[in-house]
Length: 495
Image (cartoon, rainbow, N blue to C red):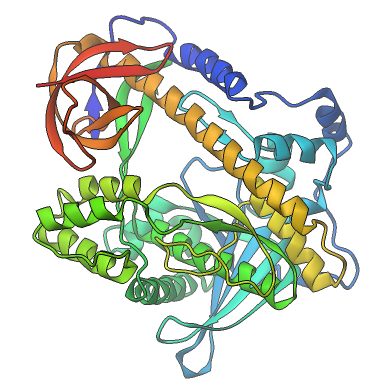
């Protein structure tokens, strides 16, 4: 779905405008837009992928591994494959790029990654956590290339439960680079078998097994209260460096397949470290502080939720709402997400009950599956390698406590950069529409202001007049009164 609008105010190179704004936003938020001389000098000494040490890595190159990612993704962090076992069990293997093999702890490249803690994605450009020579090259699980990887192995039963798991090192080879959209069309029965699938013997059946197993994992998680939330992702479309469209990205079955496997892998990583007596860096979403407002939203839809936070009851409400009013479900999901609050990183000690992830219905959860673009995943990778290699942990509990706070702060800073540049892009799209009226939904309400998201196109802005009495989830008609491309401001007044 696309909304077409040709702008007449900022004529010329919208991409160049947004690049300038993005670099300024990075600096203002304390993030580094460029790599240091020391990091570049270190990078110049790395000319080939890491090689396997004798006896340390299993050779799994002949397994039908495949990557599944966005059409334009070049930083490939993980591969997946499946194997049927006895009694309807299935073995799922997730291969994670061994980034630590080339990016050593406390090296200049590691210090840059540890400063920003994440890749920053803006409409005009990407600020990678690691140089593209690594993240899209030597540490990426690229097609037909041998790479070192950390394997997260799980045995999944017919009921979707994980019956056993293991973690170890291996050499792998990506045999098929697949894209979400074409793979999902085939899995959902709406498109042909993707050509890369047909080219690899046995891969078609392997992917069917993966899809079937992912669905079982998902079903069991949702029975335990994992939340069925549906969001809208909008990204500008450029033509000759001018924004002319807003493209809407919808999740599909291939997205779900990877998401379900990554959630399972991240949970296993956390449990594995605990079983080995090592501390970990965990990702948590705490019990929502604004549960009372979630209860009000449900009551407005004719449902009664418990007074105390209850993920299972909330999931039942969400599933019923999606079935009853699928068109409106995205707006309801957005309201719930805002009220749940953001995720954060915490240090976890062995033997202590772990903080949970409310929206995923898991108790222990560590980011581990994207070490090319998230620093917490690289930290977890180093801890996992220490565990199965039986060497001392590379980080102390005090280190992890400091890193947890730092990673949370820098992730928030990165998100603010992405939002600001996204709003500048949206302002470029809307600047010729001053005075137009739109239907919207309130996405934020507090001391700092009230925000709405337009239904068409799905752009967020601030209500600067008439916001009294508005709260998250309310529908409201607004008029566009002002945009500031440089600041990323989009202002509305309530009608």
